[in-house]
Image (cartoon, rainbow, N blue to C red; front, side, top):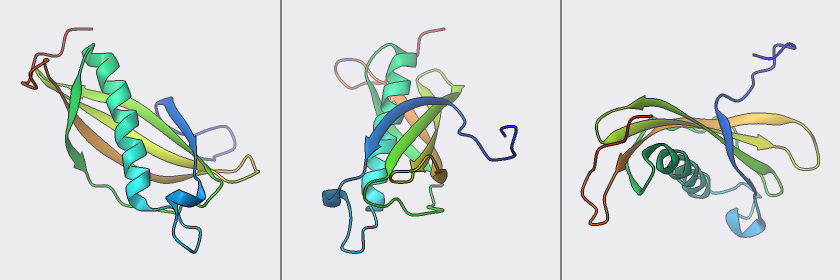
Amino acid sequence: MSKDSTPAPNGALTIRVIAMPADANAAGDVFGGWVIAQMDLAAGIRASERARGRVVTAAINALSFKLPVKIGDTLELYTHVSKVGRTSMTIEVEAWAQRYLTHNKVKVTDADFVMVAVDDTGKPRTVPAE
């Protein structure tokens, strides 16, 4: 929590992207699948940095939407490596929306992404020590 008791994002800012009309329905609400795709990209970036190579998504745990993302909002994805196993990693991803033309940010959703390090043939490989 920040000084003013407003929740703050957990993790490192990994992606910022603006929600465009093509990403939304007729009411201006952004499709959940688009948000999930952005979260998957962010998890992949963080995991590939940690694994020092190629990774694939194995699972997404318990994702539910708290608030909508609207056209014009800037979606911000924050990531944190919470667990590293032999070949897999758990990446915590938080999605926040900075509301259009304001400084107001709200948490939209969060989920744990399980990512697996793979070699050039797509077979699991050991995640290197830090």
